[in-house]
Amino acid sequence: FFTTKPYPCDPSTLPKYPPSKEFDTKLRDEEARRQRAATLKAVNRIWEEGFEKLHDCSRDQM
Image 1 (cartoon, one colour):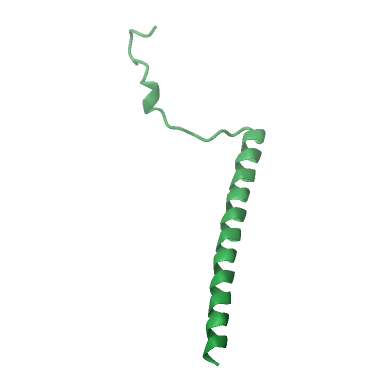
Image 2 (cartoon, rainbow, N blue to C red):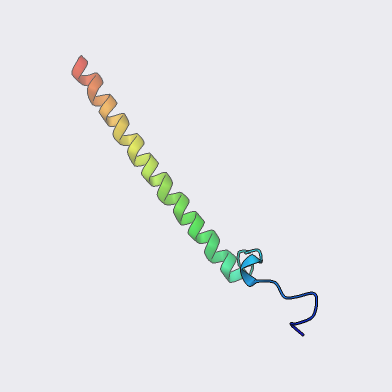
C-alpha cells in the first residue's frame, strides 16, 4: 500500500489549518477579544499619561 505510487507525503509538508470545531473557534475568538482589550487598555493608559503630562506642562507655563 505505501510502496506503490502515489507515495504518501511527509506530514510536515501538509498545510496547517486552525481548528474548525465550534468550541475551538469560540476559544480562539475569546482569546483574540482579550488580547484586543488588553492592547486598548494599555494604549488608553499611555494616552492618558501623556495627556496629563501635557496638561501639567501647560499649567507650569502659565
